[in-house]
Structure formats: C-alpha cells, structure tokens
Length: 535
Image 1 (cartoon, rainbow, N blue to C red):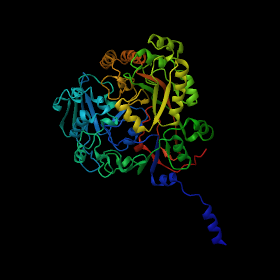
Image 2: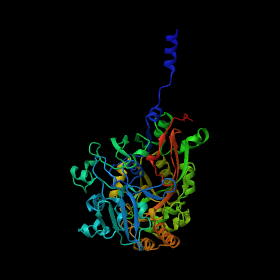
Image 3: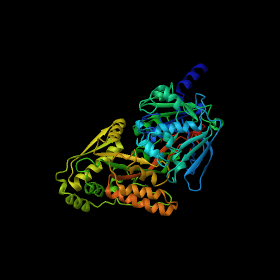
Image 4: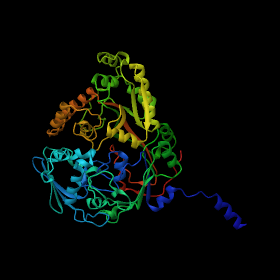
C-alpha cells in the first residue's frame, strides 16, 4: 500500500520548471525581443545587441543603474584639463582578457584605431569624432594614425586629446562600440578592420566582462558563464546567463508563463492589461528614452521634396495611432527627443494638421497625391509594427490620397536595406545611449554613420557644433532645440511614438533596477526562490 501511495504521489508531482532549476543554479534566463546580429561591440547598433554585450565586456567606465552617472570600471580614475580638451585615464593593474592576456592602455588605442578604420565602416565611429583628427582618419583624409589624439604613455595611462569639448564623453565611454576589443585575437582570425571576421565564434571569443561566452546559436541563444578573471568576480553572484533571442513577443510572454524565462524584455500590447489586473507584482513599467519613427530616403522620387516629407508628418494623428495600434501603451511623439531628459524641452513639430498637409502637397505640385509614386513602408516582422504601419497607411490614403504599400522582412534584411539605402520609408527606432538630447540629434548629422536618410544640412550640423562648444547647460539646450526644430521641419524623419517599457521580471530575480536607458547590470543580480507567476 505504501509503495502504491508513493507511486501515486510521485506521478502527480509537478515537473521542475526551467526557471526553478536555473534559480537553484544561479543562472539567469532572459529574453530579448530581437536577434543578436553580432557579438563584435564595434559593429553592432541595436538595443538587443548592446544588452547582450554588456555582460561580456566592460569599458573604461560603467553607468550606475540607479543614477546613470559614470562610475569607474576598467579605469580606476581620470582627470581632465581646465579647457576640457585633454582627458587622462588611469587603468586598473589587474585587468585581463579571458585568455589571460593583460589589457593595457595600448589595447584601447589599438581598439579605437580599428573602430576608426574606414574599411570597418562602423556606424558608431563618430563617437570618437571629438578626438583630434579622429574624423579625418575615419574618412580616409588622414592616413597617419599617430596624428590622432589617442596615446598610451605607459601600460596604465590612456590619454585623449580632443579638438572640441565633449560634454558627454564619459557616458559615451560606457557604450559597447567604445569597449576594448581583443585585437590580438582578431588579427589571428582574419583582417582586423574587416567585417565578417570570425573571432566572435565561441571557440575564439575573448572578452573582459563579468561573464565569458560559452555558446552562441544565432537566432536562438547566447549563453555565458561567470568569468573568474573579471576584476570584480568576488561580487558577481550569478554563475551564468542565458539570453534567448525571441523576435515574437507573444512567444516570449508564453515562455515566461511556462516557467522558461526569468525576464521578458517587452510585452505584446494585448497582454499588458491582463498582467496589470492579475499579477501586477511581476509587471515592470518604466519610462524609456526611446522613439519609434520613420526614416525617409530623401533621394527617393517624391521624398526629395521637403514639402512632401513635411506633409506626410502633418497628416498623422499620433493620438489616434497610439490608441488604435498600441492600446494607449506608448506616448504620441511630436518630437524626436522624448520627454524626461533633464534640462531639455523637445521641439514639438508633429501636431496633426491634415489641411496644412494637403496644402503642402498642392504647393509641391501633387494635389491629392497626383504624380507621386506609390510609397512602400519597410518594417521588420512584428505584429506591433504591422499594426502601426497599417494605421499610417490608412491615414496617408485618407488624408493625402497616397497609395501606400507595406513590406515586412526579417530584421537582418531590414538592417541591410537601411545600410544600403534601398528603401523609401523605413520603420526605425532610436534609444538614448546616454540621457541627453544629443544622443538623438547627433544621429542625423552629416557625419553620423547612423543617419541612413541621405539628408544633409549645413545649418543643422552648425547648430550641433555650436552646442558642443557651450558649457552652460541651459544655453546649450536652446541651441539643440533649434536644431531639432530644423530637423522636424525638413522632415527626413517622422516621429511616431515614444516608449514606455512594460516587461516581466520573475520574483526570484533580485537587484533589478529599472532605468530610462534600460541599462541591465546583470553582474549585480542574484536569484532566490520566489512565488509563481502565471496570471
């Protein structure tokens, strides 16, 4: 009888979930809502890529997840000259790559030379443009790298000589493109300054962050384990992390309910109300400095006229868009720069005015859309993106008489089209690299590798350059606001909505700190058993 009871109860016991097992093992299971395009910090641009690289690499400084203020990382200290043009960093002596090779000041110089190499075509190379002669070297106008203001007087001293003040230099140094890379490994795997180098494969991957790579299956998972050689290994409590790349938000949410994920990076809008009502303890809601917008190819027929582009923006009712497509879970965007940046008031130029839009079409010689070719909106596959684009399609047809086509492709295809400029209208997004208006406005400078619209404005670039020379934050913000107003009037972009982050965090996750950059300090987290999560 006792044996029969044991069999009965054993057969009815619940199977241990992936989350329960991983919690015991101190391995975080986290989902990201896009595929990881690469593990090379110098050529990635997406949020999913950045968040995947943060556990694997570390730069001169990090950002405190609570305040977003720069804090010491590979550099233990730094100083700046009175004119703000010479920065000197003192590196920690114990920094090593995961293969045991010392990481020195010369490593940073070699890494940044690679970032600036024209053949790498890195979109984020412009982060180093404040450094003397960096822009000229990147554009191929200067071939002698010794004239670039980057030097390593000794193994622990790194010096940056700037050509102009850089108010947010420290914050930018916490971004993956400015992380050091293992040039000694990259050179063994192929041309160092060429894309497609195989050094990021697990067998050859070397990094310097709190975790080291174990596995990377593109389109599926990036797995890492604690790095015993990390400078702060004693404070890292997680033994590993598994990052699942799940482009379908519904799939990601179902995995959370099934006990397969500790963290869901984003929720489908159709599920937010359910979690708010039935299990609010695991639902996180946080402001997020990000904007969804359309990039317009200003060389495309019809879109080469600023009046047409401006009319497309004026024809959009953002309030209706957010309510109909996103159930009110985002904020209507009438500017590129989102609210929430201290000391900056965005330039709101995106108020709907269909009558004015029709007048601009008529002035441009296209009353009722006459003689304008059909417009194609390209977007990466997502139910949410499709819903947004369908509302825009309806508004442009109804208000302007345009024929609008929708084309969805996988993320890589869209990314390639963006780089090649082979699109008319491209659904895009941008999230702040640091909490400042420049983090958005610098993207559309002529020198930016992330512009992708072919739009160039000498007046816009001059305003950005003028702002960089102003130390007073209030005066600098006013110049930046004039630049944003010009950008919105010329309309190489059309803002759609600003982000509000809704995501799920299992109760077993401790140390999680929401912040408006969605900066995820996995090295500060730990796991303890917690209650269930199914709504």
